[in-house]
Image (cartoon, rainbow over all chains, first blue to last red; front, side):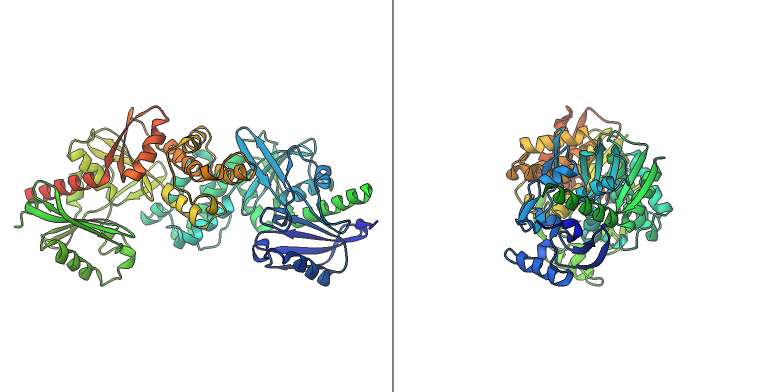
Length: 299
Length: 299
């Protein structure tokens, strides 16, 4: 049997990008690359070649794949593990594309309260942070991205979660809407951003508040240069208001890419809660390390 | 002086379309045409020609222009009339491009409660419906479109209003989002639509509920053929919830194109209120007729 923990490749394979890491014994990455070969740019039948290319670059190691590569638009579908989900459940749900050599991590699903929700990729980071003792087994995690996730951990398992399509909405508005010309400036957690967050926390009327961005620039109530940060504040403030509907810890952990976590940390901070930011990449390494340890234990 | 009420041309000139009507004495339309020459397809310097073209088709009559043609992206900017605004205020704010021959109707603006809002075009229909005694001088009007307006009338004036960008959001999601393939079916006020409306009235979490449409199809909780109507119900239900924040009449009047008013009427009906639908075109004629009567009175 392969000893995975002696060295393996972990791939975070999303819709538009993939990041591949060579993980050495101990869990640190010694080599890596990132490219634009997200699942949407790999045609059916081409995944074998895309996998071979990763091994050419990083070596002939066993490989763990996470993210949208396991979705119904990816390589091989890895069925969702239902909540409550611990990291052991992810290991039981691994889909083995090549025995003892190439495995896909399943996503997690939630059905309840008349809602349904799915995630793929965030589960590995959140349960990885837990395995590395970076977070508590009970609490609320925020994972910003194209689709932000609010995740409730209970007894070390993903107990419930809700997805808010904040990043995608901002991108649609910036790319194609009547607000497009106002949203091109970089977003900063400045006063305009905080004003947007506060308004969204106070009143739940996002699709009206967004139109108001344009109206308030037209009527001289908002400076044009503030519009992008203000609109982002409205969207992220709405997102935080939705996250607050979970039974909440006094402390919120925000996991992800630092340029996004700092905006969410600023918004959550305005609610008076303590906020901790964690780098999503480090949590990904921790999750991959724990999964291969469990693979080795079961072998 | 021209007697406008003897016969004139009224143009509803929007962003992507224009509709021109020859209005006879008495206020009925005897000839009309519609084309794709919205303001975005007419370049600066070409508006004179676009006006001449209308008179070639409908005759050498005085002409009243309403809608986005008076915006800062249109022909000549007609500054907004602030709330509270009566139809007499629109006449005082007319911008005369050619003396006693061609006039642009101003829009209406609102600034207050930390909000700012603008409308162009809807004011003529709403105040027209009032002039024709189709609605009461106190009450709430809903005017669906790309940007839905909730308008509070008080003592025969537009007292306050809020714009909700529901139509544009649906179009962005249908055209460019992760939900696009689920939203191509026609929207009907069916059970799936009503389910969406009810969920949106109960819980203010639209950007999460929208992602949930995809998740619930993936997890077999919603039929794919119901997704478009369900998503539309979520958006329109959110819109109605926002409209409810106005001091409300027991009766809501919905003015606009029949294919849209029926959806909003269905959604408002689920809140237990009486709903009346009015055809926006008839209200436009009534508003234009009243404005030219006032022009003639002042001449």
